[in-house]
Image 1: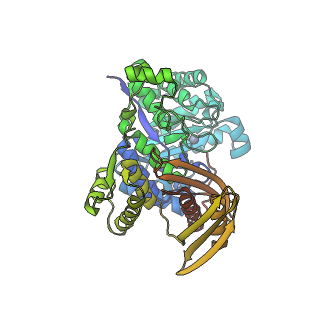
Image 2: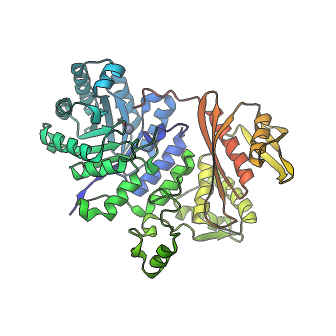
Image 3: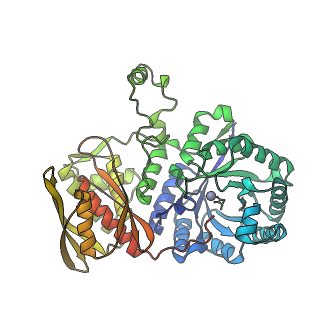
Amino acid sequence: MPDRVRIFDTTLRDGEQSPGINLSAKEKVEIGTQLAHLGVDIIEAGFPVNSPAEFDAVEAVAQSVKGPTIAALARMVPGDIDTAWGSIKDAQKTRIHTFIATSPIHLEKKLRMTPDEVMAAAIAGVTRAASYTPDVEFSAEDATRSDPDFLVKIYSAAIKAGATTCNVPDTVGYGLPYEYAELFRYLIAEVEGAGDVVWSTHTHDDLGVAVANALAGVRAGARQVEGAINGIGERAGNCSIEEVVMAIHTRGSSLGVSTGIDTKQIVRTSRLISMLTGYPVQPNKAIVGANAFAHEAGIHAHGVLMERTTYEIMDATSVGWESNRIVLGKHSGRHAFAKTLADLGYELTGESLDRAWARFRDLVDRKVSLTDADLVALVTDEISKVEDVYTLDSIQVAGGTHLSPTATVRVRHSGQVVEEAALGDGMVDAACSAIRRAVGLDARLISFNVGAVTGGTDALGEVSIGIQYEGNFHTGRAVATDIVEGSARAYLNAINRAISKSPVQKVQAP
Ligand code: KIV
Ligand code: ZN
C-alpha cells in the first residue's frame, strides 16, 4: 500500500488572502461542502481573529461541512487561539493551526523578538491550543529562510508541547526543490519526536516552483501537502492542490504515495472557486485550464485520435471534464430543473429555487439548451448574491463601426428607479459609465474578464470584474447570454458586494 498523503486545503484562508477576494459565510460553506465532496482531509476555513465576519464564516463552515477536519489559523497569542477554538468547536473534527515566524529577518524587523522569546511564545501557544483539541499544527513561518538548527529546536519544543503536525512553510516562495527536500530530511532526522508527527509542506509560487517544492517535500518524507485550488493566494499564489493531486495520481508509483481525493470532482471544484472568487483560470493552466486537454497541432490531434495516450498522460474525464452534457431545455419543467440541480449537488428551496427557476426560464428562452456547466454557473450566481442594494432593471446599448457606443440603464434602488445614459470607449465601458452615474458612486473599473461557460456561439458568457471602491479592491461576477448585459450585472454585483462589506481588517497576514 502506498503511503497516504493528507491534503490540507487552505483555499478559504491563504487562498482568500488574494487581493479582492472576500468570501461571505454562505460562499465559504458552499466551497467547503464542495471541498468535502472532493475528499480533502483538512479544510483551513479562515483566520477567525481577523474580523467578526471571518469568525462567523469559519463557524458556519465548522457547523455545516461534514467529513474533513476543520482548521482555524491562530498566531501564538492567547486571544487568537481562544478565538480559533471558539470558531471551530462545533466541527466533527477540529484542528488549531498555530504559527510564528522563525527567520532572522522576521524576528528582527517584524516581530522584534529574540529567538528565546519566539521559542517561549511557540511553547505557550501550542500548549494552549492542545488544551482545546488534540489535533494541533505548528508552523514555523518563513522556515526556508530560517536557521535549520533553530528550526530543529523549535519543532522539537512544539512537539513536546503537543503539536501533532509540523508544517514547514516556504512563506515567500524562495526555496528550490532540492533545498526544500534537504530541509525536510534534516528536520525529520534531527527533530526530537519527528517520527510521531505528520510533516507538512506549505509552498508559495513566487518562483513558479510551489508544486515542485511540495512534491520534493513528499519525496523527502512529508505526508501532508497544503495548497489552494487553482493555486490562488496572495502574490503569485499557493501550491495548486489539483496539480499536486494529479501528479501523485498519475505518478504515484514513482512517488510511492497516494491521496484520498475523488479526482472527478476537480474541475467542478475549480469552476466553483473561480466563479465565487472572481479569479478566472488561465486557459493553459494544468489540469483545470480550458486548453489543458485540447490538441491544436495536427500531428498531436491525429495521434490522439489513433490512440489517446500518444499525447495525453491523463484522461480528461478522470478530472471531471465532461460537463458539456446537455441536460435541460425549453421544455423542461420546474420539477426536472430542481431534480437536475439536486443530482449536481445543489438543494435549492424556497425563494432561491424561485429565483433560479426564473433565471433558467429566461435563459432557455434565449439559449435553447443548457449543459450542466451552465446550470452550475447559474446556481453559483444565486449563491454569490449579496443583499442587492442596486438591481438592474434594464439596459439598452447602441454602437457599431460608425456610431459612438452609448448605453442607457435603469437601476432600481430602495423602490426608486434611476435612468441614466452615457457614452463610452466601447459598449461595456458605456454600460459601466451609465451605471456609475445611476448609483452615484465612484467605483473604478480595475479588471475585466470574459469567459464562455461552455463552447458554441450561444454559450453563456461569464464576466468577472474588479473595482476599486474607497481604496479597496472588490470583485463581482455574472453570467448571461449577452456579454454587455453580463458586464453590467457583474459591475453592479461588484458595487453591491463593495457596499455590503465593511472592509476586512487583515491582521498581519502571513
Ligand atoms: O505562508 C505561510 O507561512 C503561511 C503560514 C501561516 C502557514 O501561510
Ligand atoms: Zn502561506
